[in-house]
Amino acid sequence: QKEVEQNSGPLSVPEGAIASLNCTYSDRGSQSFFWYRQYSGKSPELIMSIYSNGDKEDGRFTAQLNKASQYVSLLIRDSQPSDSATYLCAVNTGFQKLVFGTGTRLLVSP
Amino acid sequence: DAGVTQSPTHLIKTRGQHVTLRCSPISGHKSVSWYQQVLGQGPQFIFQYYEKEERGRGNFPDRFSARQFPNYSSELNVNALLLGDSALYLCASSQWGQNNSPLHFGNGTRLTVT
Image 1: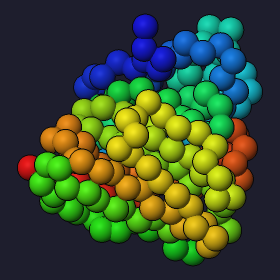
Image 2: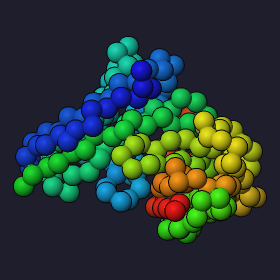
Image 3: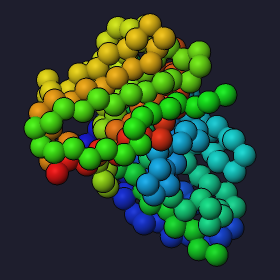
């Protein structure tokens, strides 16, 4: 079983819709969780961090964490074509060692 | 403020050669981590340094080594290059070495081994 699992996609949504990205992790002791956005050929860009169960909102982005279910999600409201990218879920397993999923490719069509 | 800076941006090497990649963290950041990202995969942890000490090492062979300097910049060295070392090498910095400190990545060095 992979440590961090994501659906590779592509996830296709129309402009203005809500995109829902999901991630599960195996290390029950993990305490911090991150979402990165990566455009093709570029480096990952941090968009959200979450440490406690529940929801955390930042602009059009909402991260959700359920430690009991070992599940993290990212919602993108009012999706724009510029949101088209690969979204990486990362879990801190200790000493800032981030374990990444393989990423979900999001395509937002105009 | 400048972000994490890495050099060079691109590099082409031959099998068996040695390579040194360089990274300058965000000003005020004391922790530097290195990651390797091959095409189609998420980044994979190589090393973490905090206050010039190695705090973590990923599942990479001894051909990979790194160090952190007094100004918190860092070098990643790879010896005896293999074709499989071709990847995007990412440096990330954070203010502290604590688990909850978010990592901020540089633009990466794209290494091609022929």
